[in-house]
Image (tube, rainbow, N blue to C red; front, side, top):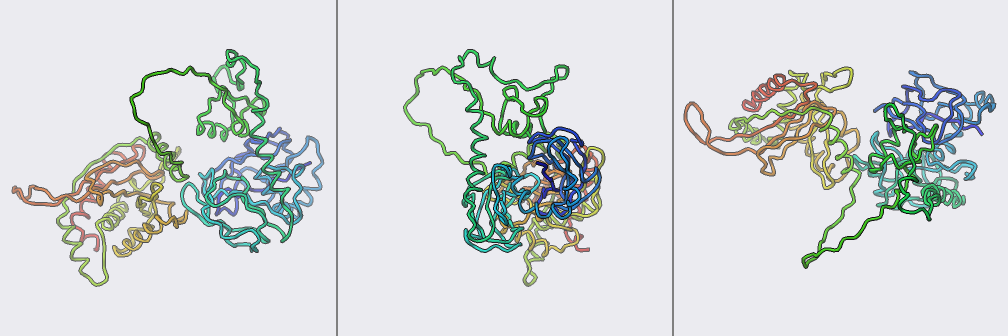
Length: 529
């Protein structure tokens, strides 16, 4: 039976998508987990994989063309199947199938295995950011039995970046909740079921769970139990490999999942086309048992003890993004020390005004914003085929939170006054610790500032917050002897270190920026001119 594939919603703000490239053509065989196309959303170009098997019978959107979410994208079915009825009535049928087929398609039960009652919608864990792979239900705002209107907030979902509100795209009664508060599931796993009041959806929920469990247990059932341990290497499945290049045939998504799980691909048997390893092979993979000889040894009296803390989505995202930045952007560091006597006097005088309060960090944000307008190369981003020199200045300010670090963005910081910057940074800091920042408030920075001076740290280096080209590390103001006019006198200084991406910011360019910054910091009245 042919399946209509609609334009997927690959981000929470996505309303339409553009087909950047088709990786399958009409007539090609499609396996579950195969990458159908690359879809350009409002945030990134992402791979869209198939949740169906069959033959690609029709492509509704050509490369470079754009269509709205849930409009006809493609049709998959049996080879030679007549789809003229679907094509003739696509505009009428596609919206109706959105409410039934799209959620089920995302969660993978097929219509043959699960009978969906009329008006019932399976809601799956949404992808609320382009890097999100799993989510945790922080709070349910609707309970089973509650009436849900389109646009109502169903739950607060903790992603890898923030805790975000998830609104319903359907109206009805909340019939079933698949995750309790505090529980985590992968994107597209069962989250809830909405439909007419009183509808029995136990079969829908049960079949979803059964199919998921079976897909995990299948490899265990197939594993030979009586195989001698010495023959493990012979029986280990080997994927198809290009003998000339040594390349393993594997889908990009499966490769990413294998890397994250630490799976040795030489032990995985591919079930895709021509032995290609696909998503389900990684999900179903069970490592072969490895026997090890226990070695007795003397241990001093005492007991080893530790606490194990599960990595939060935010912590995993921080680790992934910083590792990517450190090992892809060639970092180098420029260290300076500024005289802070005038800055201290300026702040004291400024804060004497009624209802006015600014910090040294606010002054640094403002000074950086003004300096960046004069040095757009530092306010840039690197792409493989071009550099983007930003004419606007959005300063990211690193804020420590219990789970790690977030970077809210002060937009058009060069146009804001010092009190406005102070108010914005304070508001972001409070809401960041309460996990109330929206995704939009943490995206779009063109330069980042990390300040550890309040903790007494005199100097440190930071990892660039990509796609920025630089990050400024700010230390504490230290009172110490300095030389002025040939005399040793008491003074106040502050050390700063700027990490730069050498692909976009040359050493001389970074040094010139810091000279301009020095002028603003050591003579802060110039920031008001």
